[in-house]
Length: 59
Image (cartoon, rainbow, N blue to C red; front, side, top):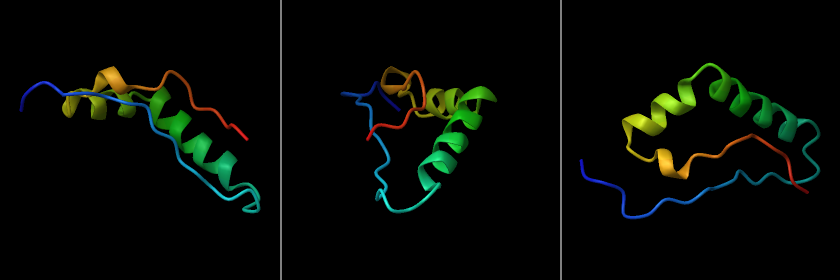
């Protein structure tokens, strides 16, 4: 496996009328960030440069 050609930050898009779905997804992302799973996955695939610093909701 070589070095990544480029990295980018991506988001998850949810419809506004899905109640608490955005909070649930944010909570799941925060959980894997907190327990180290997120970092482990990024390191495994050599894409740590594309890491997001926090989980947030934008509207």
